[in-house]
Length: 324
Image (cartoon, rainbow, N blue to C red; front, side, top):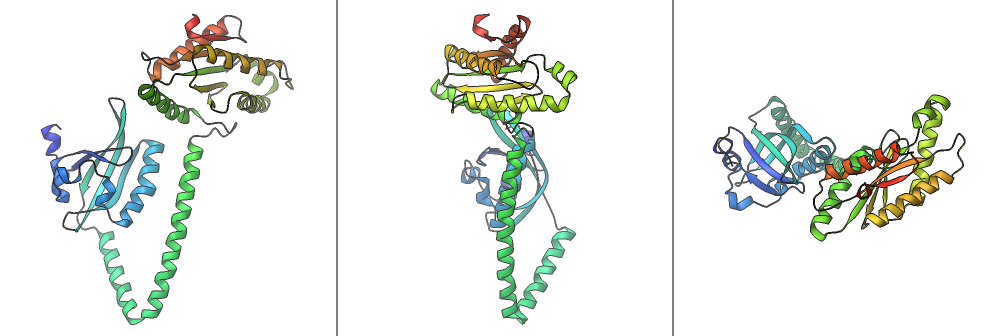
């Protein structure tokens, strides 16, 4: 780590997507009282209280996955001697040599008005609890149940929020955000196990004419129906996604170039023979198969190039980049 960053006036840590401490500067170690060897490769939540684990787990992770960054998260770390170390945390996702990590900056916080008010309120509640023990115990039980209910509700809402973030509202298919997540997983599997995979980039032919002639409501119906036909036609292991506008993508795991062409042609024929409430609907398809020379960018560019060839050469056809 750069010496200036190592001695910066704020704590700096790098954690994995799972929360494991990968690296940290001297300032962070001084803030927490630990030696580097004592917490390296340990989960960051091991130096948090239960309350702060809950905040970190139910807010930090979902937010960083959805938006890629978290700003001004107030929480407390546990010092080696057991004392609480309040900090203000900013975090941001980063990519280091193909591995996604999270960089976090932590500024130590002194006494704050809100924090002092919480202490005074807790002290007052404690005094009342001693005076009215039975009432206090009853109240604590109610609060415990309420916290559990809210925690369950928060987890449920986070799950719904995450699902909405990766789902196309119109068609119900997974969206472009999910595509990038899934593509990254398939590339990792390829690098680890050499599991070949392909993808099809699909564009509805003359879709602008559908909107101009029949209106956007009919255009939406075409998109919804095409999405349903695609899901019913592909194999169970394949994933259909809406890439944007009238473009769709089909991810084909464990599929070589020849098999990918066959699957794309099956879908093209199914769309062509379908009876539509308007003029005939057809699709053009560009196919690419991932190789060791590809990246997540180049494989999409290849499929896009093959799609452009299909559209330029009469539409309603399938083109694999290998055939160009």
